[in-house]
Image (tube, rainbow over the protein chains, first blue to last red):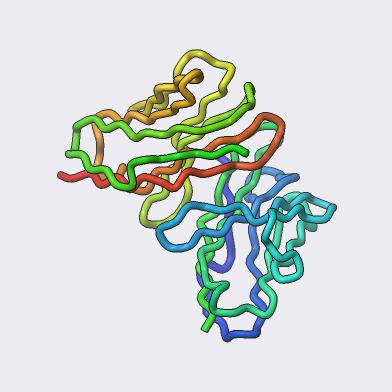
Length: 115
Length: 114
């Protein structure tokens, strides 16, 4: 089956620093990847859709200058949380769509803690 | 706007028994997809089952089956012969055709007891 990886699995950083999270599709090419955010005991909320070779599409209420997304290749998308603050602490999950199929395959998630 | 509602925050079932998780959704669309995802304690989201709205036949995957009632906008998940490894959060999700946006419900926490 399709496998999606994320790195790092967890990160702790100081307030004001930037953090980069990588999402890779390991055995398929993903023209479209997605970034979600999940607060404790809550559902997944789509933050943005990442398209290879073009600008990401952000959901309403998500600051594009704070959450920078780059999708430079068919197997890699990155999310950079710039000038992170404690309220950015959350679980960030990426997913990738396998070609023409509607199913999204999810990465294992990255837990971010901002002190 | 589409919404997905899971009215059961928590459910429990004894091993080997059957449990049904409820999901309702609201949409004006005719063509869409519905999914059930499982999120175990590891937090890795795993696809359990999917259903195309144009198909009348209910999807099944081994011990997992759905009861898709399009008119009622209901999409319940039945887990037969429950196993300890089924313990997880279960999310119902909706996707409009020709879009990539998954809309998730709030989840149901399922605990399987020995």
